[in-house]
Image 1 (cartoon, rainbow, N blue to C red):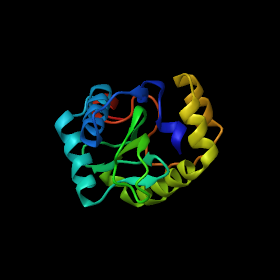
Image 2 (image 1 turned 90 degrees about the horizontal axis):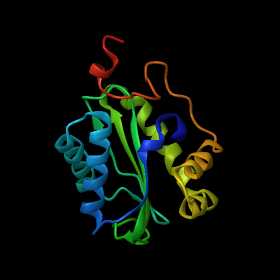
Image 3 (image 1 turned 30 degrees about the vertical axis):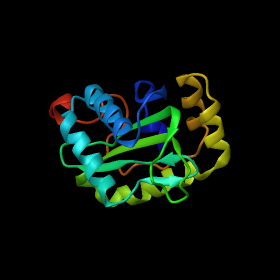
Image 4 (image 1 turned 180 degrees about the vertical axis):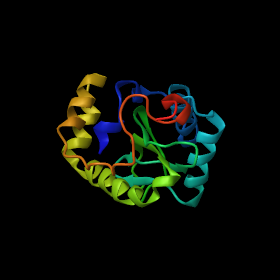
Length: 171
């Protein structure tokens, strides 16, 4: 589940932030620039979801996410923060690992199983510690690629060049 949609340029190690809003803003801008999505739309999607309740899942991990009607494939970003921040998670542990997911609203039926799998992956203490110790993006990808992942439904495109239909032409 993780590695098929996570590309090298989607991983940021030791990002410096001033807190939750700062982290989400920096992540949203980075995703928007990479994918050609509107920064404000990405930010609004993440903030709107966060207002419903913290996406912190505990043990220093948060999985902020948004369902967007303007994308046709999942988009993800993994960020390791330089300093842990308060994310108002269930255990009040400060968060230093943020896995952000933008999911196509047209594929909502596949979203909850995928989100559940992401939560299971990050609940594993070995994976969390390996990600915290990783010294490079290549190490992070290697850690995630060794984890089993879910296959996507056939109508979800994944891989390089994900997202906007204009990037795919009429594909």
